Amino acid sequence: MKVELRINGASRIADVEPRKTLLDALRENFLLNGAHAGCEHGVCGACTVLLDGEPVRSCLMFAAQADGYEITTIEGLAPAPGELSVIQDAFCETHGLQCGYCTPGMILSAHALLQQTHTPSREDIVEAISGNICRCTGYGQIVEAVQFAANRLQKSNMPHPHPHHVRHGHPGEHDAPVEGILEAAEADAPTESAK
Amino acid sequence: MKPAPFEYIRPHSLAEACELLANDEDARAIAGGQTLVPMLAMRLARPAKLVDIMRLPELAGIRPEAGALVVGATTRQAVAEQDPLIRAQVPMLARVLPWVGHPPTRNRGTIGGSIANADPSAEIPLVAVTLGAEIMLATVDGPSSMPADDFFIGPMLTTMNPGECVSAVKFPVWAHKRIGVGFFEISARKSDFAFAAAVAQVALDDDGRCLEIVLGVGGVGDRALRLDVSSLVGTKLDASAVAEAVNAVSGDMEASTDLHASAAYRRRVAITLSKRAIEQARTDASARALKGAA
Image 1 (cartoon, rainbow over the protein chains, first blue to last red):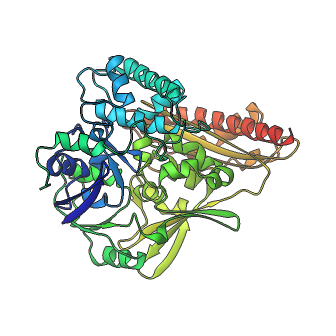
Image 2 (image 1 turned 45 degrees about the vertical axis):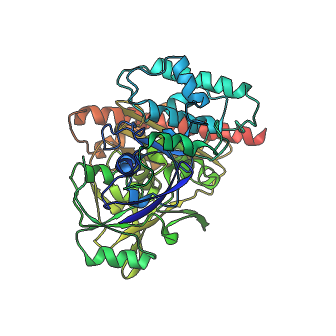
Image 3 (image 1 turned 90 degrees about the vertical axis):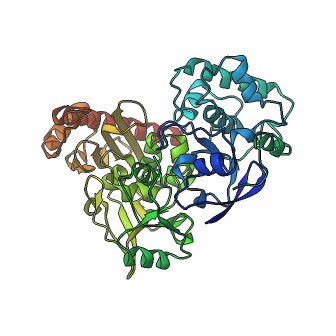
């Protein structure tokens, strides 16, 4: 069946079987391999993407169900090709990744949190990444990376979200501009047209 | 970890959805899919047809009714968690939602989906049974409903027939002013399946005397159980009275054994958590009143 999805700010069309998960469509049809296939049954969080700004497991929904949402993958976070978002940069600086398999999911979960608040408590961060498993068990540095990114965003010259309460998945400010993310996504895609 | 092929249909009305579900015994309804999709991926479920009810307008929304709050089946758990009406009128539901899965699964998972799934350790069915909620159903013959206690009959088993789907859950709203909730659960990790859980809601009068109390345990047997501790009405819920009342009904707790915990362990933990939940509910109710006075 034909599906039309909004991915990283662009409309993409693909012909998929109804049983094709959003994860497999992203990887195979749109060549966005940043969403990782880990357990493929909703346990590990490696496949996390944002749906209207909220983290969800892309292995737990079908591509056919994903129309009408703004889908953001890890490829959509950087402001421009060759650059990193504040959170991505913070993960590098604090050694918040080892093998890197869980990293896209961790960063997207952290991104959703930091759209709600730039002053998260440790508990907020732990809760936000509680659905993402890191088998290198580098959680200490991951929490540190999110805290570090939050500090940087606090000091940045941009409007801050209202930190009344942490709320997952409320579209707020991005730490990267929306315009331009398409280029970053396309830089990873060898072919322009989807299957 | 790839589902077997199926046909995907997105009906435009609830009536059409019921029709589709009734006419094909291999059709299954899908909403948030947070339990169904893993079942499909592991091929523990192989429906020929998936009927997507997630976007049906009839199943959405949260609306107050006389003495009750009706929560639409497709209300996502993350939305319910933050909803001001639910927080104010059904505090027990708001209290347990952070323990339902993780933020990404709560962003897709629905209130009605958890009810229809009927996992014995799930928190939302526990709240429905404990508060005496009414499960609203859509059928080919029109709407019907039944008490939560009759709806759940075993692990992942409900009295729903093919062609029916949960349309909403009607939670009773207590009219009392001083209401408090207590909730505890034991699991291997937070948000994993509970080995045992207990939830209580109490209403106190101005002197701190109990006007109304409900208690429920989940994860212990093959479905959530409501325990009758109405003998505590009129008392000040002191520790000895609570212990006596909980011990008196503990014989009613059917417990099951699995890899994680024995029946004896589950019963023992459930009794302890029940006492703590009542204690926490009492403290919560007292604190709310003080806050209101100040």
